[in-house]
Length: 393
Image (tube, rainbow, N blue to C red; front, side):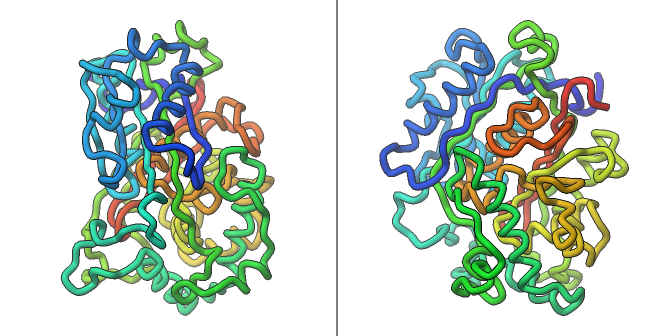
């Protein structure tokens, strides 16, 4: 049996709701909206063609079993699995489904990620279930990432302006995407004068929470050819997943200048896809910019540049939409927000549409292959999925 997933799984359908404050809809409405769009683009009938389904959802307020998906769709009697893996929940749901297709257990499957967070009424993510530590129980997400920025400022001379450039870039891209939560451009001064959240991270250095759902339909390439035609599907080239300790700050070798899960997930994905130089072999990327510092650290961890050089990429416009290697052409988490279970699936939808030349916002020129990077927990879980056209090598 062939080892690895490269070109064994095709993405034939994608569906993404508008992300944001969706007060008028509940999680069931969002699921139906995303799944129906995915089925239409895949040219499949949900009840007749789909053999199994996976749903990614993190918070109990949205759902805690496969019935989260079954009930709103009235889709019963089929295998249905709920997946949770911190902020990488959605992408891990795609991974599980893709492996089932590659193993030829099922021909056509559905994956949906969903979260309805804003109805909880909190000021941010409920971290009590994310970081169960007896002393650091109240540590917020900004407080987890802020020390990395402080250390990068000291070691490499990065500045708050470098972080602001990430926010400006992503808001420029997201302003054009019809499904983004935030569709307004900002300038450097706006970012630098925003209220402080956790030094040195200001408001525009942090992504918001949102409501939203995203879905994909997966099958094998030979079936995809019959359903949608060769020019209307992409194939998964690799999926890398790495899980590190829940308490990275306790490790004596932890520096805050690199997140080990990022490095290991990238190595696994590149090895499977046959990539030796991602800047040359890939065309763009979607990065988990929950905080601006995380986007910069990720550039280095996944081999887009050497340690200390990420700020140069943002200063020189390399990762801008018209740069040599665009990052977050759709606006990233900074513009979509972060409904935990939906984010990773949305990323897969975005890179699929980019390589098919059907992006809803900015289209990366001549995009044939790109990656999606999803980081979860207190720097603990990283997933990288590489997607390209069927003829990409």
